Image (cartoon, rainbow, N blue to C red; front, side, top):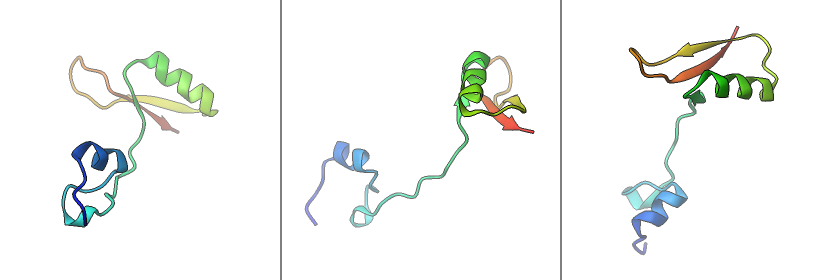
Length: 68
């Protein structure tokens, strides 16, 4: 197989070796930096009963919406 440039491999989601196989990406929950953006997203998606959880320790914020 012909060599592919790194930027193209990233764009296509290919592995850097092993004959350019497709990478398996894990599905993760959406996170937010502010409570305002998290509430706006929940309202947009129609989530009525939810809780906002901070995933970081200390002063940093990485918020996640958890439906009840």
